[in-house]
Length: 186
Image (tube, rainbow, N blue to C red; front, side, top):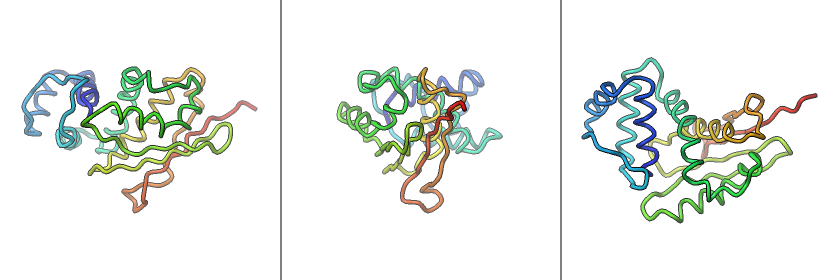
């Protein structure tokens, strides 16, 4: 995975606990401490081991931790890859997710990103489909990323925009499917 994921996961854990807890998580996960650089790629199994360890230590389950972390990660990804996002309108950007992901994926030699597509289903609704080659599938992370991504747009009306999961590979679907919908005032 891209180093920004690893770097932000460390920041996420430390901000909610402390540096000592981060060191404990790494020790229990069997990972040597290191400085995560956002421009480097790291093994997926490190993220998996850290998330598994966090869920064993916390009262939240893994999907909840992934989702919460995804909300934190989304603004970091948007800032890092801002040149790839050509839309200032939230729903237009969601509709162009495939182009955004492809352009980010093409700029990296080592990181293979999941397939993410957005299809407009009305002025205030986009259907987002997420497919990944990774195991585990990080479905909770995908949902949190969508929630966090929407919140980075001024026009989205984050308090009135919802992300609803309607299908999931973990429930036997061939992809995770989300509806991102904005409620309009009367």
